[in-house]
Image 1: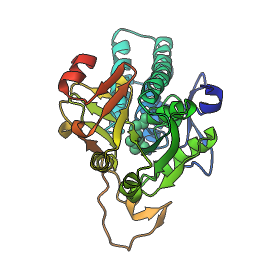
Image 2 (image 1 turned 120 degrees about the vertical axis):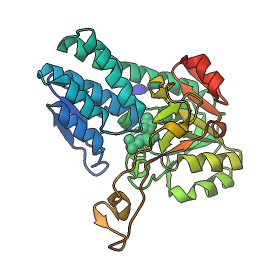
Image 3 (image 1 turned 90 degrees about the vertical axis):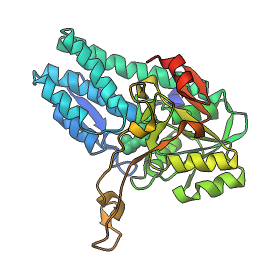
Image 4 (image 1 turned 135 degrees about the vertical axis):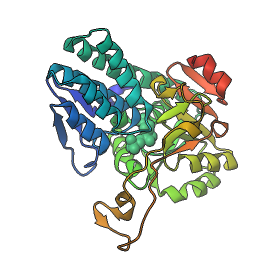
Length: 337
Ligand code: MRU
Protein backbone atom coordinates (compact mmCIF):
# COMPACT_ATOMS: atom_id res chain seq x y z
CA UNK A 1 0.00 0.00 0.00
CA UNK A 2 1.03 3.64 -0.43
CA UNK A 3 2.32 4.50 3.04
CA UNK A 4 3.05 8.09 2.04
CA UNK A 5 -0.66 8.60 1.49
CA UNK A 6 -1.85 6.53 4.43
CA UNK A 7 0.71 7.03 7.16
CA UNK A 8 1.99 10.53 7.69
CA UNK A 9 0.93 11.44 11.23
CA UNK A 10 3.63 11.17 13.93
CA UNK A 11 2.32 12.37 17.31
CA UNK A 12 5.41 11.49 19.41
CA UNK A 13 8.66 12.94 18.06
CA UNK A 14 12.12 12.93 19.62
CA UNK A 15 13.92 16.16 18.70
CA UNK A 16 17.47 15.39 19.81
CA UNK A 17 17.20 17.10 23.20
CA UNK A 18 13.46 17.13 23.96
CA UNK A 19 10.24 15.26 23.20
CA UNK A 20 7.59 16.85 21.02
CA UNK A 21 4.00 15.70 21.57
CA UNK A 22 1.01 16.58 19.40
CA UNK A 23 -1.59 17.82 21.89
CA UNK A 24 -4.49 15.46 21.16
CA UNK A 25 -6.86 17.44 23.40
CA UNK A 26 -6.90 20.25 20.83
CA UNK A 27 -7.53 18.19 17.72
CA UNK A 28 -9.12 18.52 15.25
CA UNK A 29 -9.55 22.28 15.60
CA UNK A 30 -5.90 23.01 16.34
CA UNK A 31 -2.59 21.24 15.71
CA UNK A 32 -0.50 22.37 18.63
CA UNK A 33 2.63 20.76 20.04
CA UNK A 34 4.01 20.41 23.56
CA UNK A 35 7.79 20.52 24.05
CA UNK A 36 8.74 18.26 26.99
CA UNK A 37 12.18 19.01 28.39
CA UNK A 38 11.72 17.11 31.67
CA UNK A 39 10.30 13.67 32.40
CA UNK A 40 7.56 15.10 34.61
CA UNK A 41 6.18 17.10 31.68
CA UNK A 42 5.67 13.78 29.90
CA UNK A 43 4.02 12.31 33.02
CA UNK A 44 1.58 15.24 33.04
CA UNK A 45 0.92 14.88 29.29
CA UNK A 46 0.07 11.18 29.77
CA UNK A 47 -2.15 11.79 32.81
CA UNK A 48 -4.03 14.66 31.16
CA UNK A 49 -4.50 12.86 27.79
CA UNK A 50 -2.35 15.21 25.71
CA UNK A 51 -0.76 11.95 24.56
CA UNK A 52 -3.06 8.94 24.68
CA UNK A 53 -3.56 5.45 23.30
CA UNK A 54 -1.82 2.47 24.88
CA UNK A 55 1.24 2.14 22.61
CA UNK A 56 1.77 5.92 22.38
CA UNK A 57 1.87 6.38 26.14
CA UNK A 58 4.40 3.54 26.44
CA UNK A 59 6.59 5.13 23.77
CA UNK A 60 6.31 8.59 25.36
CA UNK A 61 7.23 7.12 28.76
CA UNK A 62 10.32 5.42 27.30
CA UNK A 63 11.48 8.75 25.86
CA UNK A 64 10.76 10.38 29.24
CA UNK A 65 13.14 7.94 30.95
CA UNK A 66 15.85 8.69 28.39
CA UNK A 67 15.17 12.42 28.84
CA UNK A 68 15.53 12.10 32.63
CA UNK A 69 18.86 10.29 32.16
CA UNK A 70 20.08 12.93 29.70
CA UNK A 71 19.26 15.69 32.19
CA UNK A 72 20.76 13.72 35.08
CA UNK A 73 17.43 13.69 36.95
CA UNK A 74 17.05 10.99 39.66
CA UNK A 75 15.63 8.07 37.66
CA UNK A 76 13.76 6.01 40.26
CA UNK A 77 11.25 8.72 41.30
CA UNK A 78 10.78 9.80 37.67
CA UNK A 79 9.96 6.22 36.70
CA UNK A 80 7.54 5.75 39.57
CA UNK A 81 5.66 8.98 38.72
CA UNK A 82 5.42 7.84 35.09
CA UNK A 83 4.16 4.41 36.18
CA UNK A 84 1.37 6.02 38.22
CA UNK A 85 0.20 8.31 35.41
CA UNK A 86 -2.52 5.93 34.14
CA UNK A 87 -3.41 2.43 35.41
CA UNK A 88 -5.06 0.39 32.65
CA UNK A 89 -2.87 0.41 29.53
CA UNK A 90 -0.09 -2.10 30.26
CA UNK A 91 2.13 -0.70 27.49
CA UNK A 92 3.11 2.02 29.97
CA UNK A 93 4.40 -0.49 32.54
CA UNK A 94 5.86 -2.71 29.79
CA UNK A 95 7.94 0.18 28.37
CA UNK A 96 9.08 1.31 31.82
CA UNK A 97 10.08 -2.26 32.77
CA UNK A 98 12.08 -2.51 29.55
CA UNK A 99 13.86 0.79 30.26
CA UNK A 100 14.44 -0.29 33.89
CA UNK A 101 16.18 -3.47 32.72
CA UNK A 102 18.60 -1.33 30.70
CA UNK A 103 19.16 1.03 33.64
CA UNK A 104 19.90 -1.99 35.86
CA UNK A 105 22.40 -3.20 33.26
CA UNK A 106 24.20 0.16 33.54
CA UNK A 107 22.97 1.80 30.32
CA UNK A 108 24.15 5.40 29.79
CA UNK A 109 21.84 8.14 28.41
CA UNK A 110 22.84 7.37 24.83
CA UNK A 111 21.92 3.70 25.28
CA UNK A 112 18.57 4.67 26.84
CA UNK A 113 17.86 6.96 23.89
CA UNK A 114 18.59 4.06 21.54
CA UNK A 115 16.23 1.83 23.52
CA UNK A 116 13.39 4.38 23.38
CA UNK A 117 13.93 4.68 19.62
CA UNK A 118 13.84 0.87 19.33
CA UNK A 119 10.52 0.73 21.23
CA UNK A 120 9.07 3.33 18.86
CA UNK A 121 10.42 1.64 15.70
CA UNK A 122 9.23 -1.82 16.79
CA UNK A 123 5.73 -0.47 17.39
CA UNK A 124 5.51 0.96 13.88
CA UNK A 125 6.73 -2.32 12.37
CA UNK A 126 4.23 -4.28 14.50
CA UNK A 127 1.39 -2.08 13.29
CA UNK A 128 2.28 -2.57 9.64
CA UNK A 129 2.41 -6.35 10.16
CA UNK A 130 -0.91 -6.40 12.05
CA UNK A 131 -2.46 -4.34 9.28
CA UNK A 132 -1.60 -7.06 6.76
CA UNK A 133 -2.66 -9.91 9.04
CA UNK A 134 -5.96 -8.32 10.07
CA UNK A 135 -6.89 -7.16 6.57
CA UNK A 136 -6.37 -10.68 5.19
CA UNK A 137 -9.21 -11.92 7.43
CA UNK A 138 -11.75 -9.53 5.95
CA UNK A 139 -13.81 -10.53 2.90
CA UNK A 140 -13.78 -8.04 -0.01
CA UNK A 141 -16.63 -5.55 0.11
CA UNK A 142 -17.01 -5.59 3.91
CA UNK A 143 -18.19 -2.86 6.25
CA UNK A 144 -16.48 -2.24 9.59
CA UNK A 145 -17.20 -0.38 12.81
CA UNK A 146 -14.42 0.87 15.05
CA UNK A 147 -14.34 2.50 18.46
CA UNK A 148 -12.12 5.08 20.13
CA UNK A 149 -8.91 6.10 18.33
CA UNK A 150 -6.37 3.42 17.52
CA UNK A 151 -4.54 5.14 14.71
CA UNK A 152 -1.22 6.90 14.21
CA UNK A 153 -2.06 9.26 17.07
CA UNK A 154 -2.38 6.36 19.52
CA UNK A 155 0.77 4.53 18.37
CA UNK A 156 4.15 5.09 16.71
CA UNK A 157 2.25 5.35 13.43
CA UNK A 158 -0.26 3.57 11.15
CA UNK A 159 -2.27 2.26 14.10
CA UNK A 160 -3.60 -1.03 15.42
CA UNK A 161 -7.31 -1.41 14.61
CA UNK A 162 -7.09 1.67 12.39
CA UNK A 163 -4.02 0.11 10.75
CA UNK A 164 -6.17 -2.90 9.77
CA UNK A 165 -8.78 -0.47 8.43
CA UNK A 166 -6.08 1.41 6.48
CA UNK A 167 -4.64 -1.81 5.04
CA UNK A 168 -8.09 -3.32 4.40
CA UNK A 169 -9.26 -0.20 2.58
CA UNK A 170 -6.11 -0.07 0.45
CA UNK A 171 -6.55 -3.76 -0.42
CA UNK A 172 -10.17 -3.23 -1.50
CA UNK A 173 -11.51 -5.45 1.27
CA UNK A 174 -13.21 -2.68 3.25
CA UNK A 175 -15.86 -0.58 1.50
CA UNK A 176 -17.60 1.07 4.44
CA UNK A 177 -16.10 2.48 7.66
CA UNK A 178 -18.13 3.60 10.67
CA UNK A 179 -16.58 5.19 13.74
CA UNK A 180 -18.30 5.45 17.11
CA UNK A 181 -18.17 8.86 18.73
CA UNK A 182 -16.61 7.47 21.96
CA UNK A 183 -18.17 9.55 24.68
CA UNK A 184 -17.16 11.22 26.84
CA UNK A 185 -13.79 12.23 25.42
CA UNK A 186 -14.87 11.65 21.81
CA UNK A 187 -11.69 10.02 20.52
CA UNK A 188 -13.72 8.55 17.65
CA UNK A 189 -15.36 11.81 16.64
CA UNK A 190 -12.37 14.08 17.16
CA UNK A 191 -9.38 11.87 16.35
CA UNK A 192 -10.39 8.83 14.28
CA UNK A 193 -12.51 10.88 11.88
CA UNK A 194 -9.62 13.38 11.57
CA UNK A 195 -7.15 10.61 10.71
CA UNK A 196 -9.51 9.00 8.22
CA UNK A 197 -10.20 12.32 6.52
CA UNK A 198 -6.43 12.99 6.29
CA UNK A 199 -6.06 9.63 4.51
CA UNK A 200 -9.00 10.21 2.20
CA UNK A 201 -10.84 7.19 3.61
CA UNK A 202 -14.59 7.76 3.46
CA UNK A 203 -16.12 7.11 6.88
CA UNK A 204 -19.30 7.87 8.76
CA UNK A 205 -19.51 8.89 12.38
CA UNK A 206 -22.19 7.28 14.52
CA UNK A 207 -23.41 8.07 18.02
CA UNK A 208 -22.22 5.31 20.35
CA UNK A 209 -25.86 4.46 20.99
CA UNK A 210 -26.44 3.78 17.25
CA UNK A 211 -24.09 0.77 17.15
CA UNK A 212 -26.59 -2.06 17.70
CA UNK A 213 -29.00 -0.50 15.20
CA UNK A 214 -26.14 -0.26 12.66
CA UNK A 215 -25.27 -3.94 13.16
CA UNK A 216 -28.89 -4.96 12.77
CA UNK A 217 -29.00 -3.19 9.38
CA UNK A 218 -26.38 -5.63 8.04
CA UNK A 219 -23.91 -3.06 6.71
CA UNK A 220 -21.02 -4.06 8.99
CA UNK A 221 -19.38 -7.48 9.01
CA UNK A 222 -16.63 -6.70 11.54
CA UNK A 223 -16.17 -4.64 14.68
CA UNK A 224 -12.43 -3.83 14.87
CA UNK A 225 -10.98 -2.37 18.07
CA UNK A 226 -7.63 -1.91 19.80
CA UNK A 227 -6.74 -2.87 23.36
CA UNK A 228 -5.19 -1.38 26.46
CA UNK A 229 -4.42 -4.71 28.12
CA UNK A 230 -5.04 -8.31 27.11
CA UNK A 231 -5.08 -10.79 29.99
CA UNK A 232 -3.64 -14.32 29.85
CA UNK A 233 -7.05 -15.80 28.96
CA UNK A 234 -7.72 -13.29 26.14
CA UNK A 235 -10.06 -11.02 28.10
CA UNK A 236 -9.45 -7.54 26.72
CA UNK A 237 -9.57 -4.13 28.37
CA UNK A 238 -10.35 -1.35 25.93
CA UNK A 239 -12.14 1.98 25.80
CA UNK A 240 -15.46 2.13 27.63
CA UNK A 241 -18.20 0.94 25.30
CA UNK A 242 -16.15 -1.90 23.82
CA UNK A 243 -17.92 -4.52 25.97
CA UNK A 244 -21.38 -3.51 24.77
CA UNK A 245 -20.13 -3.55 21.15
CA UNK A 246 -18.88 -7.12 21.67
CA UNK A 247 -22.24 -8.21 23.08
CA UNK A 248 -24.17 -6.55 20.26
CA UNK A 249 -21.80 -8.05 17.66
CA UNK A 250 -22.33 -11.57 19.01
CA UNK A 251 -26.12 -11.11 18.93
CA UNK A 252 -26.07 -9.87 15.33
CA UNK A 253 -23.51 -12.34 13.95
CA UNK A 254 -20.97 -9.56 13.36
CA UNK A 255 -17.35 -10.66 13.88
CA UNK A 256 -15.26 -9.03 16.58
CA UNK A 257 -11.51 -8.37 16.05
CA UNK A 258 -9.03 -7.05 18.64
CA UNK A 259 -5.79 -5.67 17.20
CA UNK A 260 -2.86 -4.97 19.55
CA UNK A 261 0.91 -5.42 19.66
CA UNK A 262 2.44 -8.00 22.01
CA UNK A 263 3.39 -5.08 24.33
CA UNK A 264 -0.33 -4.92 25.20
CA UNK A 265 -0.45 -8.58 26.25
CA UNK A 266 -0.11 -9.08 30.01
CA UNK A 267 0.41 -12.77 30.72
CA UNK A 268 0.94 -11.95 34.43
CA UNK A 269 -2.73 -10.99 34.67
CA UNK A 270 -4.90 -14.08 34.58
CA UNK A 271 -8.28 -12.64 33.57
CA UNK A 272 -9.98 -9.34 32.88
CA UNK A 273 -11.33 -9.31 36.43
CA UNK A 274 -7.82 -8.47 37.66
CA UNK A 275 -7.36 -5.45 35.39
CA UNK A 276 -7.66 -2.08 37.07
CA UNK A 277 -10.20 0.08 35.28
CA UNK A 278 -9.31 3.76 35.29
CA UNK A 279 -11.95 6.04 36.78
CA UNK A 280 -11.64 9.63 35.62
CA UNK A 281 -13.06 12.92 36.78
CA UNK A 282 -16.84 13.12 36.57
CA UNK A 283 -16.43 16.58 35.01
CA UNK A 284 -15.59 14.79 31.72
CA UNK A 285 -19.19 13.53 31.64
CA UNK A 286 -20.95 16.52 33.15
CA UNK A 287 -19.91 18.90 30.41
CA UNK A 288 -18.74 19.07 26.82
CA UNK A 289 -15.74 21.10 25.65
CA UNK A 290 -15.38 22.66 29.09
CA UNK A 291 -19.02 23.84 29.13
CA UNK A 292 -21.28 22.35 31.80
CA UNK A 293 -24.26 20.61 30.18
CA UNK A 294 -25.73 18.80 33.19
CA UNK A 295 -27.62 20.47 35.99
CA UNK A 296 -25.41 21.75 38.83
CA UNK A 297 -25.30 19.31 41.72
CA UNK A 298 -25.71 16.22 39.53
CA UNK A 299 -23.10 13.47 39.92
CA UNK A 300 -21.59 11.06 37.40
CA UNK A 301 -19.67 7.75 37.29
CA UNK A 302 -16.89 7.78 34.69
CA UNK A 303 -15.05 4.48 34.15
CA UNK A 304 -13.05 4.94 30.93
CA UNK A 305 -12.31 1.30 30.07
CA UNK A 306 -14.24 -1.96 30.21
CA UNK A 307 -13.50 -5.63 29.64
CA UNK A 308 -14.63 -7.60 26.60
CA UNK A 309 -14.54 -11.26 27.71
CA UNK A 310 -12.54 -13.61 25.50
CA UNK A 311 -15.64 -15.62 24.57
CA UNK A 312 -17.04 -12.58 22.74
CA UNK A 313 -13.84 -12.09 20.70
CA UNK A 314 -13.49 -13.91 17.36
CA UNK A 315 -9.87 -13.03 16.76
CA UNK A 316 -6.93 -11.30 18.41
CA UNK A 317 -4.38 -9.98 15.90
CA UNK A 318 -0.84 -9.26 17.12
CA UNK A 319 2.41 -8.89 15.19
CA UNK A 320 3.29 -12.44 16.26
CA UNK A 321 0.23 -13.87 14.57
CA UNK A 322 -3.52 -14.34 14.77
CA UNK A 323 -5.36 -16.09 17.60
CA UNK A 324 -8.83 -17.28 16.66
CA UNK A 325 -11.34 -17.89 19.47
CA UNK A 326 -8.82 -16.79 22.14
CA UNK A 327 -8.47 -18.69 25.40
CA UNK A 328 -5.71 -19.41 27.94
CA UNK A 329 -4.25 -22.29 25.93
CA UNK A 330 -4.00 -20.35 22.67
CA UNK A 331 -2.60 -17.31 24.47
CA UNK A 332 -0.04 -19.46 26.30
CA UNK A 333 1.01 -21.08 23.03
CA UNK A 334 1.73 -17.68 21.44
CA UNK A 335 3.02 -15.64 24.36
CA UNK A 336 4.39 -18.13 26.91
CA UNK A 337 4.03 -17.05 30.53
O1 MRU B 1 -8.14 6.84 27.12
P1 MRU B 1 -7.38 6.59 25.85
O2 MRU B 1 -7.75 7.53 24.75
O3 MRU B 1 -5.89 6.50 26.08
O4 MRU B 1 -7.86 5.14 25.40
C1 MRU B 1 -7.37 4.60 24.21
C2 MRU B 1 -8.01 3.33 23.84
O5 MRU B 1 -8.81 2.76 24.55
C3 MRU B 1 -7.55 2.69 22.58
O6 MRU B 1 -8.60 2.03 21.95
C4 MRU B 1 -6.46 1.69 22.95
O7 MRU B 1 -5.44 2.33 23.69
C5 MRU B 1 -5.86 1.08 21.78
S1 MRU B 1 -4.81 2.29 20.98
C6 MRU B 1 -3.95 1.60 19.75
